Image 1 (tube, rainbow, N blue to C red):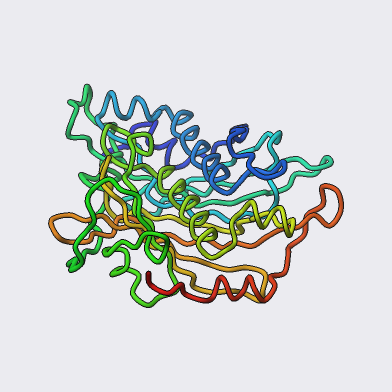
Image 2 (tube, rainbow, N blue to C red):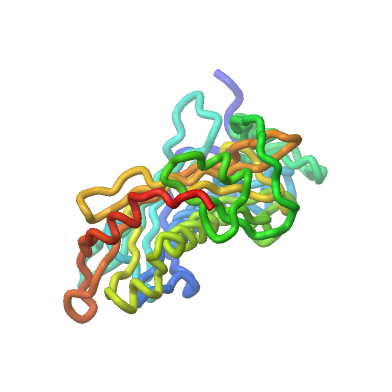
Length: 334
């Protein structure tokens, strides 16, 4: 038998926690509903609360032990609407197995509807404690935490870039209004849209790298740009058809670190259109380093639309032929 884990580490790995949280008003973009990004934010906040309850809050992990809290994988299924005024009961259950080198948690989010407890979302959240080279730890690590630490979040696959990149700092889109040679190379002849954007400091944490919430923002942004590029801009669709975008599930996995102010090449590929009700897309994020494209994140999301069949009553909308064609037909290269 090895050394006995520190009590806080034991609590982190073994004790479920329940917290009561509210979504941020910022996520109330359409009607009274909270969007997928902020539902994921609530799941992340629930795991942060779990760390605090165990006695290992993220700030102390960094200040005392030189360890950065990094969500490296978040997979969420949305079961029911989360409304702007809901108080969420967030249940976090540790799901770490013997030999795991990452902290894995199941997060269930519940709300009350007419006296009934309803599950509105379920997530799997994976955390790595990133050793920070910029600061000197004040204390030795708690016993049992070392297996969940890493000197780097990952080493993503890479490929040689043959296209000549555009000058640093400009907005560009593949197959859009301004063609980008690197994006066009990544997209090829697939049914995809590309976006190149400099990663700002407010998408980052611990002075250096893009955090999971930053990639959630990238996913939301590239979806919006993709729909506009395909002739389905959100406001136009709302105004003319009364359709509200809805996400049924999403996942993002960090494969390597993306550094503050690097340019992210995001390729957004339509993978399937399901029975004129849902479509799924894949997001792949790359950075250009020393002439090679390095994949730093990947993810998937499933989208559909709701329409208001009666006041405050929403049902799935069925895609018409024009919508199916817009989603299914690759744009010609510019």
